[in-house]
Length: 106
Picture 1 (tube, rainbow, N blue to C red):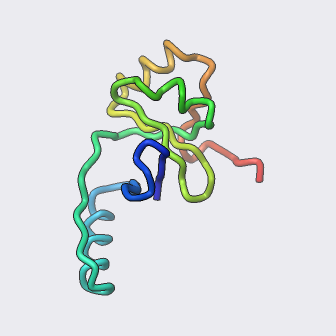
Picture 2 (picture 1 turned 135 degrees about the vertical axis):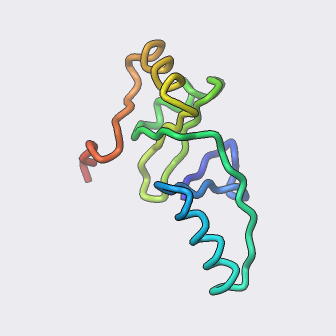
Picture 3 (picture 1 turned 90 degrees about the vertical axis):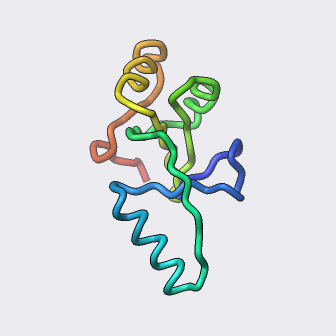
């Protein structure tokens, strides 16, 4: 689950590796918990581990958004590789670490 102050708690973002995971969640909510839900697809296809410092830098950038993961990590989400490359070029100081290569200092 991902959250942001902009979206508020009423609109959490469910993140998954692939579309089938969303189908499983919808099915379980409807059949196991009798709580049907409606998912709206967001345009993001890439994620990078980031920091709170990225939030203001990406706040008004088309094709990008920073959300807080339930474990406290920040994720910067991007529509596509071109949006990511544009951000990396224009904001080389931002932390944008590919998922799977990050070792949190916890």
